[in-house]
Length: 329
Ligand code: TYM
Image (cartoon, rainbow, N blue to C red; front, side, top):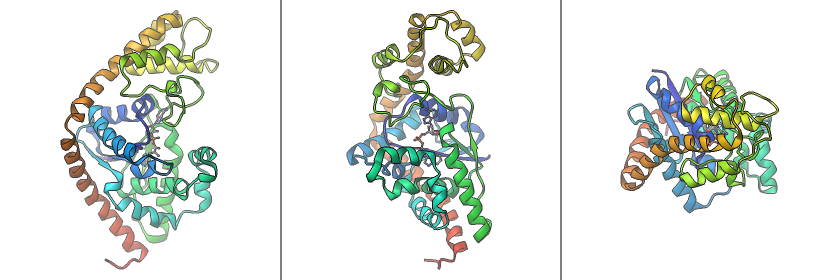
C-alpha cells in the first residue's frame, strides 16, 4: 500500500475546517494506504503556547484522531516531539535551504505580521521542520487542505536539492488535496479561511462544541440579504461556504443540496444546517468522551505508536546522516 503522512498542530481546538479539509478524508481513505498522522507539537511552539494547555491539547488531539474514526489498524498516530529524528533532520535541512525559499512562505508572512518584533527564528524555519516530518517517512502522498500546498511544494524542493547534492535519499511526495472541503471559510467572513488563530470564537465551529453552541454560532453567522441559497456565486461567498458545510456534514450530493435549498430563506436554512452539523459531531463527541475517561490507555497507545514511528524515522535519518558525511555515532 502507498504510504501517507500528515499532521495537525495542537495549537487550538480542532474546527470544522480541520475536520472537513483533512481528517474526514483521512478516515474515508485510510484503508487504501499505510498512514502516519502526527500531532505536531513542535510546530505549535513557533508561536507562544501555555505549557499546561499545550499538554492538554496534545492529548486531546490524540483522542480526537481516534474519535473521528482513524483506526490503529491502518494508521500510526503519534506525537512529533516523541520522535527526535524530526528536529535532527530539520537541522540538516536548515543548512541546505536558501533563506529566500523560506521567506516566500505565505503562512510565515501572515504570522510574522501578527508577531511583529517577537517573530522567532523557529517560525521562520517552520516549513523546514515540516519537510523533515514528511520526508522521514518517505510517503507517496501528503493529504492536506489547500492552505498547505505551498509548504508541500517546499518539501519537494528540499528533497530534490538534498538528492541532487548527496544522492537519492528522499522520495518526492505529492500533496493530496481533495476538492471537497479543501477550503472551509470563516462563519463571520466568507472570504477568509476558518482558522484556529482567528480571535473570534464565532468564526469557527469546534469539533467539541455542544449543540447549543453550534446553534448559537450558526444563528449569528454572516449571511446576505438574498433569498434562495446557491453554490458557486462569487458574489455570495457565505452562501457557498454554508451550503458546502451542509453538504459535507449531511453526506448529500451537491445536486440534492442545490435543489433542496434553491428557494429557501436563511431563517429556514440555518436550523437545517445546525441540525446537520450537530448530528455529524455527535458520534465523534461521544467517542471522544469515552476515550478521555481513560487517559492511561491513551498514553499507552501514544507511546506504542511513537515507537513504531521512531523505527521508520531513524532508518531514513541514518541514511541522510551517512550521505552528508557524518561519522556513525
Ligand atoms: P494546521 O494544524 O493548520 O491544519 C491541519 C489540517 O487542516 C487543514 N485545514 C483546513 N482545511 C480546509 N479548510 C480550512 N479552513 C482549514 N484549516 C486547516 C490544513 O490544510 C491541514 O491539512 N503546517 C501544518 C501542520 C504540519 C503538517 C506537517 C501537515 C506540520 N507538519 C506535515 C502535513 C505534513 C498546519 O499548520 O496544519
